[in-house]
Image 1 (cartoon, rainbow, N blue to C red):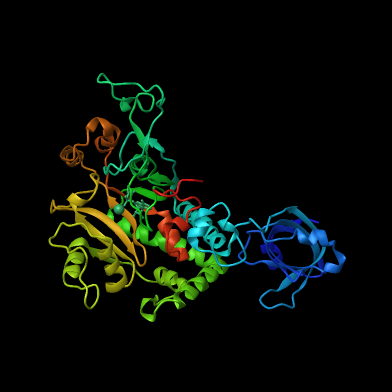
Image 2 (cartoon, protein in one colour; image 1 turned 180 degrees about the vertical axis):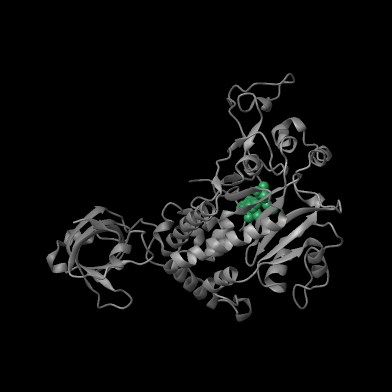
Length: 477
Ligand code: 4AD
Ligand code: MG
């Protein structure tokens, strides 16, 4: 008899056959009903034990968290909400779980508590659903690009360049802490960091992706990126995963079309393939919201929010238009924005972004043509010489989900920009080469994967959508 997963058993309609299943006990009620989960689905399978046929000492070892192996007959269930259950014939405890010390008790735990037990939190319904969705979204992303003729490329993790020019890098050092090389004035010589070169963990694979776009045409990266920003928010991680497509001969308008089509496609993939997990998370959120005053509740439930994004066009608005809207709006009846935009050229704060998507347009918004001085050096300068062909995609409940641009393809303009920002040409000689040899219009964007997972699961804190979050407080596991 082959061992089946709980998901396989629950979708089986042929009953009265013997089956075998392994998993972890969620609850054992009345010495009779074991709720068994193996991670294959949000649902448990009920295993019914006739306690008179089993050794009392064996049954005592069937506790929450224990790993067990059950064999028995699959029968139609009399119970509510389950199609089949197992009449247990044989029961083996594979791994005990001391009920006195097992942290994941069959009750509601706070997310803070579960974060401290990140190694066990996927044994709860919420976290198993979130992580199955995370996996499914990753797959949908690779599928989208594969279906659309993109090549997947791996960009370096250790690098000498600062792709964003924002100086938010974690340094990588191979120096011997006890005996580091010293400069002439006796200071640690960090120039010797990585076998004679100063290096850091990558903040983005974009620059390297550009090199491949300029030969393979359509490429994407999907890898870990690192930011040494000490921002302790529910939307920032020091280590996060980014998806970065890069396409030759594509301008900013094409970039917007690609981003919108891509996001709709991966979200509709999970609507189709992760129904049960989404329904569970949707209900969880609705239960949470019932505790809030009516005014603070969200007007749409989770699944409808995702469907809304899939079915409606994103609103495209220039930075200049957005500034006008913000200057003429109040976030609510009485209050002003905390940070008032005095003049054209100021960067938008998250309160402004959220106002635009959540209150004004009430849909995802693509903001484009930002002032050049608040964006990275590589963005294509517009003819007005003031704005660049940048785009940010803002999502309700999340804020910035995507950042991208058409890239500066003109060698002289790029060189001037780098000079103005003190970026040495020697550091990016290979990047400049792309503009010397066969340069062309090209564009791309970066999607913060965890922010997408937050949107698709309705989780409010980015620490709860990545297995082991890296933030100023969390680096233990
Ligand atoms: O806007 P960013 O910094 O853009 C880039 O890195 C470009 N090189 C991308 C490109 O054009 N290929 O980052 C892109 C996205 C953001 O929109 C956000 O979703 C996410 O990455 N992100 C973070 N996510 C979690 N924690 C952080 N600290 C993040 N910083 C950026
Ligand atoms: Mg950005």
